[in-house]
Amino acid sequence: MLPADTDARLRAAAFAYLDRATNVGLALVGQRELAAFSFDGTPVRLMATQQGIWKPKFLDAALSFRTVFTADPTKAPYEDEVGPDGYLRYKWRGIDSAHPDNKALRRAMALGLPLIWFRGVASAAYLPIYPVYLVDEESESRQFVVALDHESAQLREELPGEDEALRTYAERVVKTRLHQPLFRQRVLSAYANQCSICRLRHIRLLDAAHVLADSEGGAPVVTNGIAMCKIHHAAYDVDIFGISPDYKVGVRSDVLAEIDGPTLKHTLQEINGSTIQLPTRPAARPDRELLGARWQRFQAAS
Image (cartoon, rainbow, N blue to C red; front, side, top):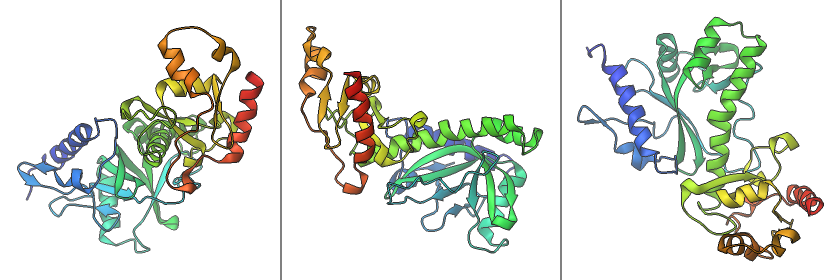
């Protein structure tokens, strides 16, 4: 029998390891990084290699679960996973409630244990979201209800599921802890982790710029995103420059006429007329219709 604190110590060690592994700007892990984890001197796998749910043999409950990468960049990977209460859902393995993997998740839920959710961003590359908690099970839909932080899990116990404040809070957490990081990582991966304007490759200085913002009806999908460094992202957001449907950069005329230092000259003025660096996969390139709508706004600002 394992010491009573083994499970808690292992989960804490796994979270600390992922903190270190993802603290290099990429925030992504693959089987190579995960294979390097060990606990008390023994290698321990953090994610299953085949199935979606993982429970090490010496634990009583699941440690992690994963969602694989979808190659269709026009489809939001989470569009069918958010319930009316604002919480995410994760499907059972298969249809058998008594499958060992489903029982392992159910045990983690009963014990209130924190888990890791590995979300596929590219082939063999995952964004780890942790700690997450299973707070309910919907057997008729063969799925678990997932809270993305401890506060969401606690509120789920304290407030009725139809509470509007609960739903609003859960939606905000899902957006900030899952949707925004997923959008950034998917866009940067599509652009080979470089700014589409200046080719900067320092990942911590890169953002995923929306062509159309959420408030304008823009969806957090790859075709509505462009990888940019923070300077170019800020300039794009305030329409200092725009990108036409044929991927050409246009800089505002008043900015072109300004006389300032080398930053203005090399960072903004010299990109006028250039073509942005595009993803190698045509299906991941910016949607021309979205660019056209944004280009009209830029021309109006000019």
